[in-house]
Amino acid sequence: MKKKILVTGGCGYIGSHTVVSLIENNFEVTIIDDLSNSQEDVIDSIKEITGIKPNFLKCDLKNKDHIDNILKYHKGFEAIIHFAAHKAVGESVQNPLMYYQNNLTGLINLLVCAQKYNINNLIFSSSATVYGNPESLPISEKNKTQRPSSPYGNSKKVAEEIIEDLATASKDFSAISLRYFNPIGAHKSGLIGELPTGIPNNLMPYITQTAIGLREKLMVFGNDYPTKDGTPIRDYIHVEDLADAHVKALSRLLNKSQETNFEIMNLGTGNGFSVLEVIKTFEEVTQQKLNYEITQRRSGDVPKLYADAKLAEEKLNWKAERTLNEMIKSSWIWEQKVRKQL
Image 1 (cartoon, rainbow, N blue to C red):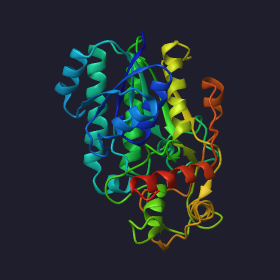
Image 2 (image 1 turned 90 degrees about the vertical axis):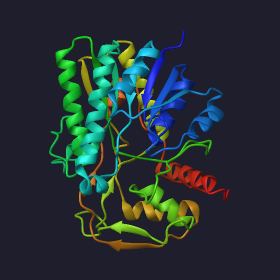
Image 3 (image 1 turned 180 degrees about the vertical axis):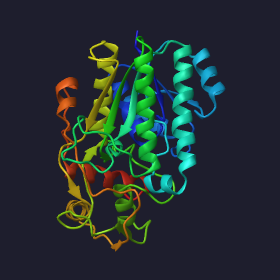
């Protein structure tokens, strides 16, 4: 019998790649998603890649009764992988209550219902933003979390605290929180990738949409940071590497190999690239000239974030393998396919 896994936000960018990896590792997947920042036709793309169509149920996690009904009639889940959340730093600064309501109410409702139906394993999609403006680099799990500079980041920090409190209170409940750095790239098939609604908040889709002509120009938010070229430095990780880490973390939970009920692991490459370095690498890899403009800093951004991911390597036997060039090339292939220009 295949083990049944519930994936919230499974139609989204990281969620869909993780669903592919789960299916390829012989798990039976049910996706719940409200489609607020994703498209249902990703389900067909997942089937095209894997040969298997995951179950899909539309669900808004802010509606506890809806989650309850789903878990009442769809029994036997061994674990939940929780991706569903709003995720734009800038938007969260403008609309903090929307972020707290969606990201925290949704999580609490999910956990209440999971407890009721005895689903006691959780993988949580967290973020390096919980470290705030880090005191030291590279960032390891020993770095103290600080008040993040955006409500988005703070919603992830508070969510981790809620999960940790539940793990402390319930000896049956176990969770692993995976703190991502900056996921980019697309599936090697070119069939799934990052497709944000509206103006992108993340760098890579903004770059690819500018290169293909959807955006007039790329805005670079600030060149006066204390970095080598003045632009922020981030640790970019291929989304397929990220997906593989979720499957390994899930196996750790299901095999009851974790050392405590609540574990935290960074997922990154350990290398930092500046915004301008990513732009120049994109131009070299794709032979596309980018129209970009330096503008004011964006609120909520910190100068440098890159990971020490040794713990995930040690505990999950996982390491990011794909290069920045591979990330960029797959993103560009995906963008061209989406716009039907390949």
